[in-house]
Length: 454
Picture 1 (cartoon, rainbow, N blue to C red):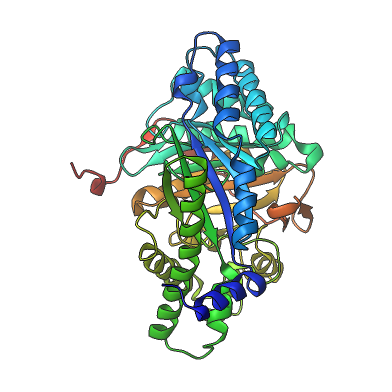
Picture 2: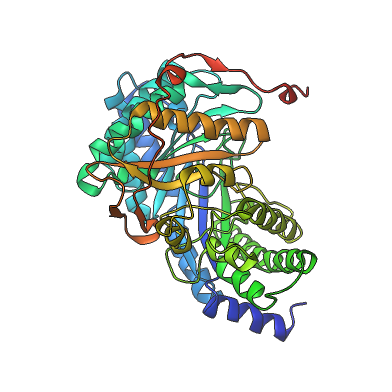
């Protein structure tokens, strides 16, 4: 039974410490929408999404109102569209028509984002995969709510360097296609290694082929709650520090479990997973960087930062898995630069560089996230960054990602404003030495020896 003290504590976490359910995400399989006729495929897609998700937003709002728990986003993830459109799409423009249909459906049901304009090409690209990838700049330029992802590697298969090289060009083209909005399209495009099938967080969400026809996944958050708990024990040793984080993560995840079960019941859709990631926002007091400072580093990027982040990530997972039988997605701690005021402050103070961020991604939830770089950065350099991040994921058997934004017309010293949850970011310097010969080789980097486990 929940006692009065726990009710008061949870209420305080919500009102004063920025606890929220970051997203309720409905995963929808569109495999049965595939048809040889593009028009028919689009009609089926629109009908299925608007039928299954018609009550998603209202249900989220009702739960938030009744339980007093903020639910920030309501989202949809779908089957990777390169699979759905393979029978009817002959050109990149055909895929753009599907993107417009998806955007129209997302607007109709009122969700914030729809993820799954995606391709899984970790071992090789089909003709359909390549067409979708080449359509991404146009698709993100002409839609508002569509998010795109491409999985270019995995521990089991290695890294598809042809796809990595292509994504360097695609990111540059997306930046150019959305330059009137400070290259905002790149903020809705992520390149992944070891992408999970059940991730509720954008931009990397898609509905894996192993999932049910429809599913409810919930992403919880609460950096402010963890920060507040650590502020109460400023000089504690690591044992007490870890125990405090673990207990706090348990409480945060129980809130998400409650919301997930309630949403599942009301929508008549099976409950999938809880993603217990600490996802920051630009709001003051809702920062993963501030947690790292509470642990003891002056700024993220100082010596000890990677160890502090590893500790945080592990304790969040240990606490979360005790609070729900179905923990999945990414789960841990996100370190997006533009969405975390503490990270922005660290960059502006000169404490945090892309190279240090890369080291931190070895132990965080995802990878290099929401990083703005000079618009004249070569596509081959971006491809090299993607390759490095993919290698970290492949070797360490974890999800890694790159969501990097070469802002057209901006250079180091400038700042770019994305707005909302995406925040703002200083333009970070990039290593100017070339990786062109490396990324132009083509082919595939083999999987590491420890991948052979069958």
